[in-house]
Image 1: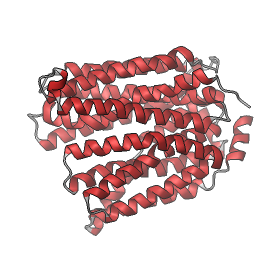
Image 2: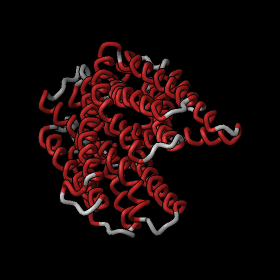
Image 3: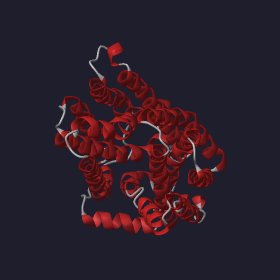
Image 4: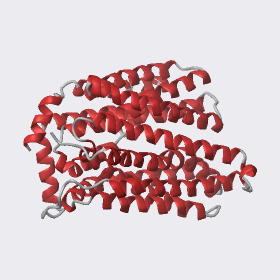
Length: 418
């Protein structure tokens, strides 16, 4: 059985989630979308600014869909996952810090920096995920993966809380106004990300040696062929695509519902903070549950809870329900993500984790592609947005059915023979 690298390596690896989650929490979700509309693109119409922001997100995601398998393959071929992690982290850090320098009205520059920051964030996660099997070993995959997500929720929540205080009370920090506070928030993201990335770069090693094979289309075809030779890993990836699409759709629809029932931006930030701090202990708890029950059964439980969330959202009426809904999502969001990563690690050869996690992250970039189309189509056909939200349960049901066909023990045996 493959052994891990020890306690220091485990904590160093997990702290990278603490480091980079601030980009997702503060830049992607918390401040950039609102600040882009109200500060950088204030001269554009609402529709036009929405178009350009959506285009930046879509183009960055499309680039990573194409590049993710190549990045994962290169990580295995070169045997330098840490260097790959450092390179993409450096890109994300520079782009996040660069947002501090963008003047009002320079929306095009803000979008370029944001889009490249997304590429850095996504590319680094491929190398980061691929390091997990070597760091944790087979026995501790669920616990270590959950530790990373838990630290990510806590770190992102702490810096977000500080940034929220800065924005609502800029004079207390010697800042001129809220706009300057938001710009400083982006700079703090860059500094935080860079500082807390040092442990993983210093104390986690690449276990897999470099190979003589080049990164070519033939190697990608070979990776797909090898995945098909691992039927339980392949089935899990398809199941993951379904249910993680539902997860992404629910997360976005929660915000849309909050706006629909009259919550202001302060309420939405408060709900985001609630999700972060609930997510910290919940991710740890799900990791323990995954160890005791097995990751597949714990993921199944999370899928059931998400289905209940969908039914709850279908009938939700009040702001109080929105906050409860945010708390429930926080309870299972980190768990389903961390255990999915751990389960996939069990179903693939540890010395080829880069190439397989490239495919895993590629499917992750398709998250919430089917969901919004399903929601929009059903809503248009029925004339009811609530019916559209209810339709997301189909994605969870499909994922649960496919997940039930994954035999983890047999999948591990197949991975060991490849």
